[in-house]
Every structure is written in structure tokens, then in C-alpha cells.
Length: 221
Image (cartoon, rainbow, N blue to C red):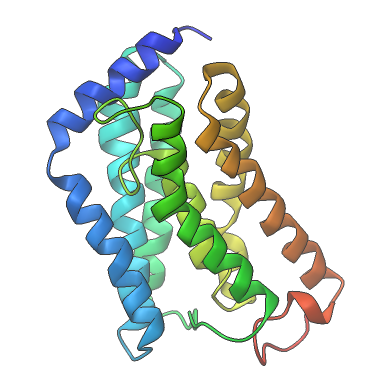
């Protein structure tokens, strides 16, 4: 890597201090997504897609483009990919795509909710247990790894024919970020591997038209 572990966490210190209080808004947006899921209505899909678009845009432009790129030139490529994902979410929201985000009594809902709860609660707690104290820590909504875990969890609650394309970039980042977690000593980011593995299991299940991978009354492929 072209940077050290100390350099990596120093970026988060500067980043979190510069973006304050965006972290609070990001957590509020995450809970808004849960509220929209609990009280499903016509604003559920565009609301959730809008939140995800904003999160991925902030990660791409602010984190990768303005801060991480200072110590890692590859971050400019990451910035482009994250912004592209933000655009995809925004396009789905504006076009009124029927993603049908909902919580149902099925295995995909259970897996998705576990990942969402991990990103919101367990991720920062594991970070603090590992000695990562704010502001030297990644935060949901403005840092790539917890945002990716949260995103995969949310997407598992949508209609497969729509969300499968939106899962591609998060899956790629789950591999990149998860590998970096071992090198940099960020144990909470190991959750990326779990999130990616869960998404792949359901993707394979949908390809094989297995009942466990369906979301509620979702038809087979």
C-alpha cells in the first residue's frame, strides 16, 4: 500500500472534523430508511434510493475524491465508481423504479436487517473495542465500508430484478475494502466479507430459482 495505517486513520480525523455534523445527518438518514420500511408508502422507494444516492455521492466526492486521494492515488478511481453508484440510485429514484423495498417474513429480510443493524450499531462498537475512537474512525453514511454494508442490507429488501444491478458495485467494494481491512487492522470492516458473501448466496439462490432466496411473493427468475 502507498500509505501506512497511521496515515489512513489520520485521514479520518481530518475528514470527520471537516464534515461535522454530517455524521449526525447520516445516522438520521439511516433511521429514516428504517422508518420508511416500517411504514411502507409511496415515498418508501424514492426516499430510500435518495438516501443511498446521497451517501454514495458524499463517499465518492468528499472521502475518496478530496481526502483519501491525498494518500492513495487509486482513490480517484474509487471516487468515480462511488459517484457512478450514486447516479444509479438517483436515476432509479427519479424514474420511479418499482424496487418494492419492504420487510417480509423471509430469509432475505432477516439477512438484510442483520446487515443494517450491524452497520448502524455493531460497526462503531467493534471499532471502539479495537481502539478506534472518534474522530479517528469510519462513520456510517460518510465512510465507504459501513455505508457499503448498510447498502447491501437495504438492497436485499428490494425486488431482485431491480436491485441485482445496484448490488454490483457494493459487492466489488466489499472485496476491496474487506481485503484492506486485514492489512490496516480494521476488524469492523471484516463485516464487508460477510455482507458480500450473503449477497452472493442470495444471488446464486435467485439464479437457481431456490425458494429461500425469494423476497416474499417475488416470482422466480
